[in-house]
Length: 246
Image (cartoon, rainbow, N blue to C red; front, side, top):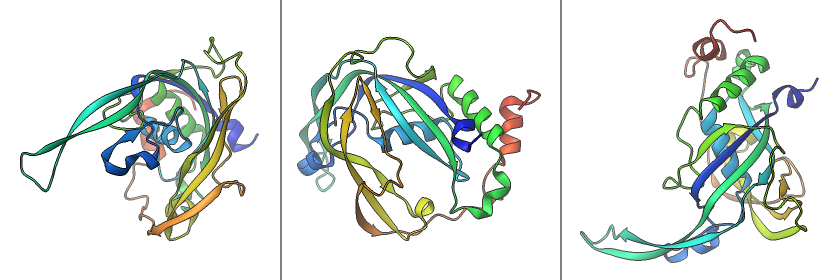
């Protein structure tokens, strides 16, 4: 059985609002959300549930459970170059969102110094327990003011708003970022792709897919980790699931 088959997990994330910012709209302080979550946003949610530098979380697909509805709000922003001054900006959010997410773990081959922390059964068990507890860190849907809530689910269970809809094309969107501690390259990169939703489901190409459009942003060095800097998977497992079988 492959590592993907052994470590595939699912969760559902819900929230009153979400803001998966389209970077093109950030000019002048305005923010407008993408209609659906990006790969990077879902990866960030999964990493808030449970993550270690030993592995990478790969998002396989997302199911859009509720209708895509936007709501604009006026936000008062402080002017940092003028004491007490403020200005208005308009942020456009997604309202009342719900997503089912399927993902799996892959070992981070750039972290050979953490090979002793590679225990697929324990990492998977910790992830499942963390999902059941709503995550180990706060869950945000694209931005800090949009709180999310995570729970267990089986991907495909229940009825979704777009289950019987035609294919929907969302055009070019952000896929994610290439970080040096995941790629082995000393720069931060950007990935773009053309998004298609079929029957309410978006299947993501993996970050290594050569058909993704890539761009280098700037030089960046990988963060340094050793086994002395992190809690071992054995200790985390004992803390969360002590006494249970692997």
